[in-house]
Length: 176
Image (cartoon, rainbow, N blue to C red; front, side, top):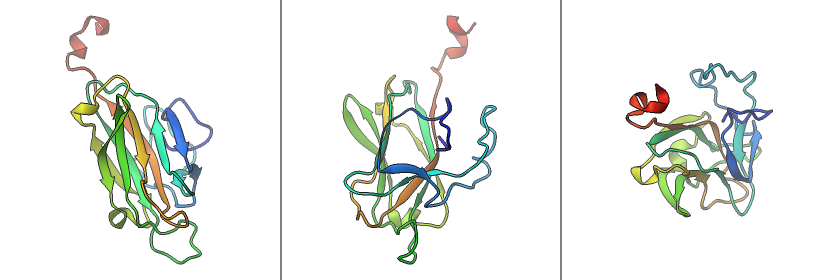
């Protein structure tokens, strides 16, 4: 999902987004490799990322996705850099985590420390989905468990969740 409007069939099926809004407040991913052509889809403009601010909760969770044969989650992450108090994207000092959900249990499989992702630009992240998360209805969630509501801004952009084919797909009856 590149968080551009209008939403398209290429957008991720987000079930819940709390205190995250499409915006350029923290900038946008400008890596040319991700801004190119994806299966005949090309974003006309690169104006937004999903920026998280606000109080109580900061999270985005997908609907259940079929990753029963494994897969990978790829995205670009930016945490607010240390800047002046007048900056729109406030400095981040708290971590962001990536989780998967199976049988109503959230399990962390990625932790992104603020000190490492606090930057003026987005950084690429790629995580293999753990075997325990391989189901036909796995949900994924980005979350910041603790934060100061007046700072700790972060953003994700160009989120991709890849699913692998079953190992013998090319020999199966349905693909002949």
